[in-house]
Image (cartoon, rainbow, N blue to C red):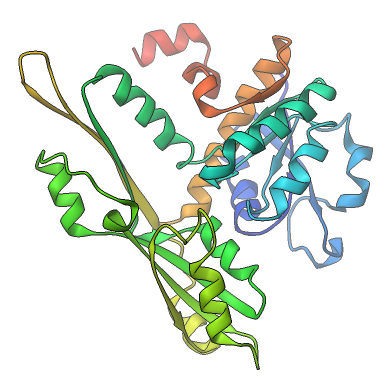
Length: 325
């Protein structure tokens, strides 16, 4: 590609800020504007800030929109509408509802003759790729996914949408006993509750019913209901002191055996000091794939499992074969 890929950002929370930083490291990209529901004057970005109401004025100035909102309410509403007008990348992470979200995005993107790559990140995203890869090459075995310990952006966003919550974060913690059983090849049958805990720290609004808040969080389908969830209510000072960092990580492990009974194990691991900054870099890389798909005449929605690895790179196929094979 001789011209830089022109990127627009929708939303300027943790992911939006991370995308703006990531673009500086991608020499074939340039940021065009941040589109926001807030007063643009209140958004502290080095890019031009524009009201979301004026986004269609930029149809010819943007190659790919990166949708940086949350999965709970932002993306289900914004994604299908914007996919009619722009090619998009998003990090929709409500695993249980991905098929429905994909169908909605696919319909909208085809209406607009655009490309939408959904659920881009590390899980769903890079972990999805490794689950598919490991299961393909080790057909006899079991796959395990462990997250954390770390702060989950999607789950934290879901907490903050609960009525009465002023501030909130959620940490996913893998249970040591389960992880050890998997790594030693015991191939345990583990329920969702036997693999992880979800630990929440919440600052409630003055006068809010904390019992109702806790029950709403614990009963939230897909996000918290299947897990052992603990909710701690703390004051704002403690929240600001102890819960401003965003580390995360996790493992995908496949244990299996060959036809002769030889034990095999494949593992992919991430250790992240900044979850949003890493996730944002993945979103930006997939913008290359969206542009290449569009150039090939493809339209509709795609997942990371539909994207050839080479399409994420700014290198030519010849370079990749020479340098990375």
